[in-house]
Every structure is written in C-alpha cells, then in structure tokens.
Amino acid sequence: MSLRGATPRVRPTPRKPPLSTTRVTGVKRPAAGVDTPVCSTPAPNTDCPKAKYRSMPTRTYQSVLDRKTAECQKLKDELKAVEMDVMQTEMTGAEAAAKEFAIRDEKRQQEAEEVEQAKLEQLMLVEGVIADLSSQQEALNRDGIARMAEREFLLLTGKARVEHLVKRRQDFEKEMVEANEDIERTLKERDECLVLAQEAKEKHKQALSKNSFVGAQIKQIEDLINEFSRRGTELDAKKEQAMTSIEEGKRTLNLHEEERRKLHNKIEELKGNIRVFCRIRSPLNSEKELAEFDIEGNKVLTMRGKERAKVASATTKAEDHTFKYDHVFGTNATQEEVFSEVAPLVQSCLDGFKVCIFAYGQTGSGKTYTMEGPANNKGVIPRAVNMIFEKVTNLTHERGFSCSLRCAFLEIYNDQIRDLLGKKTNEPLKVSYSENNEPLIEGLSEYVVDNVATVGELLSTAQSNRAIASTKMNDQSSRSHSLFILKIKTKDPVTGVTLNGVLNLIDLAGSEKVTQSEVQGQRFKEAVAINVSLTHLGDVINSLGTGKHVPFRNCTLTRLLQNSLGGSSKCLMMVNTSPFKEHVEETIKSLRFANRVNNTKIGVAKRSLD
Image (cartoon, rainbow, N blue to C red; front, side, top):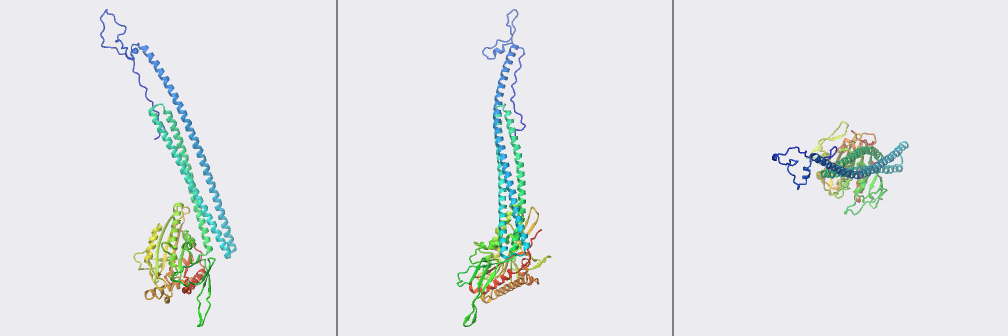
C-alpha cells in the first residue's frame, strides 16, 4: 500500500462553547423595597472548580480564556519542534542507506563492464583461431594433396583447435549464466529494499494512528519509497540491457556453431567421405585355436592365411595378408572405444548431412553385437541415439533451435522389404523413385520421437520382429539385413536455415558357406538370398569411381544404399571378423572386400538445406 500523495490526518480541535447570554429564568424577583444582590443569578457553588469563572463578569472570563488558549498554543509549538528533531534524525539514517545503495550499484556496473571486456577478448581469440584455420586451408589448396603424415598432422591440429573453440564457447556460456545470476541477485536486493521500505511505511502508519503530528515523517518515507522506485526503474533498464547482451551472445554462439560445422566438415572431408573400420571380435570359449594376426598403429592389419597342401607329403607355408584401414580395433576393444571413432559421423548428421554406417562380415563375426549390443553394453545404434538427443536438447534449450526427429526400422528378407515397426510385418513393401531419382519406400511406418526411452521401445519392438535363426556356425544368426533410419530436422533461429540430416545404421546379414552352416530348406533360401545381395553390393563397390554404370538396381539392398554410396552422403563400413582359425579364409575375403571399399572414391557430401 502506497502513501504517495496522502494528506496527513489532523485531529480536529474541539470547539469552545460560546459564552452564554441567555437570561436566567425561574428565579422569583424580590418584592419592592427589599434589598437584592447585584447579580441576579443564583449564588455560585464554591465546591465546583469552575465556579469562580462562572461568577466572573463576561469580559473577565474572556480574558482568562484567551490567556489559557495562548498557553495551549505554546505547548503545541514545543511539541512540533520535538517532532521536527525526530524527523531530522530519521532523515540522516535514510541518506546513509541511499549512499550505501549507490556504492553497490557502482560496483555492479564495474563488474558488468569487466564481463563485457572478457566477451570482446574471447571473440578476438575466436576470430584469430578462425583466421589461422582459413590460412591453413588456403595453403592446403595451393599445395594439392599433401602426404599422409601432413594430413594427419593437420587433422590433429584442426581437431585441437575445434576443441579449444568449443571450450571457449562453453566458458562464454558460463559467463552469460553468471551475469544473469548477478542481475537476479541485484533485483532480489532491490525487492528486499522495497520490502524494508514498506515495513518502515507500515510502522510509521501505526505511529500516525497514535500521534497526528507524524505526517511529515510519512512524507519523508514516501519520498524514500519514490527514490527506491526510481532505483528499481534504473535496475529494470539495466536488466533489459543485460538481456539484450545475452541475446547478442546467443546470436554470436550460433554464428560460432556455424563455423564449427564448417571446420568439422572440412576435417571429415580430409578423412574421406567413405572410410572403413575393422573390428576383430573377442574369441569364444569354444574357439581354442585362433588365427595369427598383428595390428600396427591401429591402422594396419596383417593376417596370416591358412596352410595349404602342395603334395601328399608337403604343405605350403602360410601367406601373410596385409591390409590398411582408417582404424583397426583388436579383440580387447570396448564398445565405448568403437563409438568414440564413430561419433564424428553422427555429429555430421546433426549438421545436415546424410550419414550411413553399416556392419559387414561373415556370420558369427559380431556385427549385431557392434551395432546393437546387449542391454548392459550398448552398441552403435543406441549410443548414437543418446548422443543425438543430448545434442538436440542443448540446441533447443540453450540456442533456441527448433528440432524434430522421426525414425523407422525395416529389414530386407529374401530381397523383400518388411516393416519391423508396422502392424503387418510380413507384408512386403515396394520401392519407388522420386523426381530426384532417390529411392522411396511406400507404406513404411515413421514415428515421431522426442526422447531416448521412446526410441528404445521401438528398437526392442523391431528386434523382436526381425528374422533370426540358429545355424551350425551361429546360434543367433540374422537371416536378413536390418536398416534403422533416423531423420533429424533442425532450424537455426538466427539464419532461418533448416537442416535435414539422415542417419542410416545398417546391420548386414553375414555371408556364409552353406557347406559349413549346413542349412537346409528355408534357411538355405535365406543364405542364398543373403550371399546374392552381398555379391551385388560388391559389384556396386567395384563400379564406383570408374565412371561406368553403377548397378544400384540389381537388388533391393543396393537400391536402398544408393543415396549412401552415390556420393551425396558420408559412409562408414565396419568390417567385423572372427579370430577363429577355421574361419580365416572367410575373414580374408571380408578384409579384401573392405579394402576395395577403402580404395573407392565417391563425391563430396552435401548438406540438405531448406
């Protein structure tokens, strides 16, 4: 309740009764000749304190009354002087409080200027890093294709600088949060001052009800409240300035995010838009005799072949086969180590690129374990989903991006597409082509997802519907190729650009020799269909980069992989191998196929923008 503009209440002065001029009646006049007193009124009662005034004549009574009134006025003036002394004492305390508040306000202003200076310094550092990276890129373009050692050095340098830039960005976000907290503390102090002023106002209002002469004090308190209100208005203005600065900071961060995307894409292009990883699974308890192999520098794999009989009494010496890939994981590699190398490609999906990651290898080589993994040791697919949702949450809450995600899950069984998330999983779906010659799957179920738990439920449903059977070589053998599709759409609030990223995670069924798996009947038909589709995939790989016709439409698998292998996306092949010596021939075949993929050249990946 505000007392602004209130008029102090003054207790009315009681009115003095007028002097009586009424004639006294009811008294008998004395008879003539009888002595009568001078005053015709009855004799006063001497016991009454006011009797002596009543017996006085009118003029005398009036003079006494005036003298008493003057004495009363003198007492009032003295009381007013005392009240003025009290008011001056309270004004001194209010001025001290106002001075202390001004000192605090000046200190906060200095801290805000220091934060702004720190922002400018960070921006200059970021611009310096970007200029350095640009000069290095120009030097690389002038010199052409650098040697392998120089390329790796540039990759490490660029990665370190990108990490430094991300760290700077995190520090800047932290300072923004601290500045916002400082503003909130300032507003809280202002509110506390207003509460104290309101309490002082209520106390003075109570004092006013006891004494009508404290109106001047209430007026001073109202002036103090007005001063606090003015200070509050100034703080609100400073808050608006701080919010404007925060918005500018967000726009700056979004621009830095765009620069990060460009640098990340350049680094990925230097690594190659199609790359190959090799993983040798851990040996099983039943596998007593293991193949001989050696890994050098996490990039070169040497596998010793199987000894062959030359004549009945002699055998040839086993031949060593050496292969070079982008990364080789040994039998002790963990799921975390594998995904740490895959994560940059997942980030490219968030940056608006089409990304394809597929696992290849013979049956029982650990493809499904690598891609899906058990519940207590998740593979690439669930880890990629977790990473994407973490990034999307950061973009949505801290950067103001608008994001939407949709997913689908299908399998290619006997060269037919089946929807693993649909109501009729056994009904085959057809493939058509868009105006841009991109394959489209008619009737495929797509689900909008907004959290990791929903995607986990869909993955469990798809796994339960997938075709799996037991063979002599593998107790849980996948009898189909599975494809998990995640479409990500993000809109930048600063530039208004919408990015359309697609992540395809593929678990190819393993190639197998029917003489070793000993399958019959329906399982034999499944094995033939799997081997035929993998053969067609090899034909597509051999045709890429030669300038000749690429037979993408020879089978359903290569049709769906046309966007991933045709040069418009980034592709990773994870070749999985078995350490068992009996499987060494199939292992070398898989490694040779992976080597052909590693030597294949495709076009430069392009972002999908709206």
